[in-house]
Amino acid sequence: KNVKDDDNNDDLINMDELAYKLKQSIDNIHDEAVYHLDWLYHKKDGINCIATCSGDNSFKIFHENVKNKKWELLIQQNDAHKNDINWIEFGPRIKPGVYLIATSSDDNITKIWQFETKVDENRFISKDEVAYNDIVNEID
Image (tube, rainbow, N blue to C red):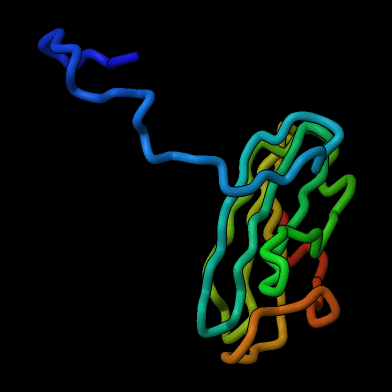
């Protein structure tokens, strides 16, 4: 199937020849729909994480296992809000291995969370090396 451009030319893109191919999927990660995700990659801290949020009022953080190239659950925060979480985003790097995460919900509250890892420039984090602090700040 070809896609037409603004001038109605149909030879701009051949959709059958696109180079996009599914590399990997993370299935059944929430009980409700996933509303948003954010990706954090920081080579120096050895972090490659995906954060997801959902209509089940939770958020989860996954990291890529460098040995088997699979995404594994690192942190699960159930009932992080009273209602659906619509947005999650990694914030600034506070210091090596320490990041903030913001979540926003239908409960009209934005929460700031702190995410810490042990830093080793030669390898990526493992599940055993993560410290996770509860809410740093709540904005309503």
